[in-house]
Amino acid sequence: MASSTESSVLASDICKEISSVFSKSTSNPAALDVMVEEIAAAATRKSRIFVYGVGREGLMLKALCMRLFHLGLSAHCVFDMTTPPASASDLLIASAGPGGFSTVDAICGVARSSGARVLLLTAQPHSGSSVEFATSVAYIPAQTMADDQAVAGGEESSSALLPMGSLYEAAMFVLFEMVVYKLGQVLGQSPEAVRARHTNLE
Image 1 (spheres, helix red, strand yellow):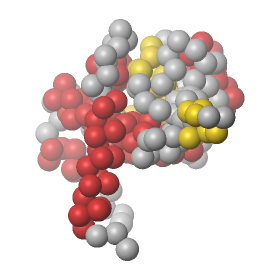
Image 2 (cartoon, one colour):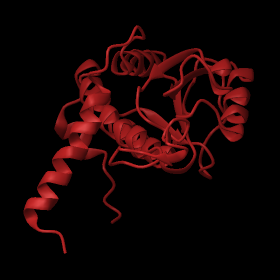
Image 3 (cartoon, one colour):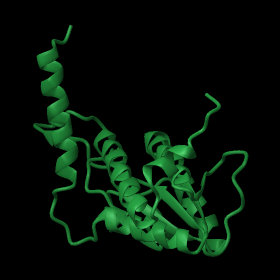
């Protein structure tokens, strides 16, 4: 059974891994700036915003969608029964951490053919099939299942605390909290206004 000290150390180490994602030097624009700019522009156009991702990436995007709605935006999760059609000027936010998924490619392709913009989140901004559909890219330089295994002495191993794509997915959550905070300022949404849009059917 883990002691409180062990739990604290593990939590601290995991938080350091997540924090390191945002301190990496890169020639790509900061994901925070890209996302805030794209979403704020969609808000100015009074466009609808759609989100899509597979697995845990999709769960992180659903959490973002909820907060975008709380900010007063027309936000929708792809495949929800009440999701409207995408059209010109709308924005799809999709994620393909390892660079591409067949389902992400398909959804992005439909969005582009409908005239919508596609903001792709990925850890592989220069490769992967999904990048081909993007009108803008938010680079999250975190480990995914594309690079989670290091070969040492002929055996696969990993020194990271967070397995597979967990670091990328955790970084998504933290990034989205920053995005929501910045958007609240850009869109002039007070905490009271955001809170007032939260459901009471609970």
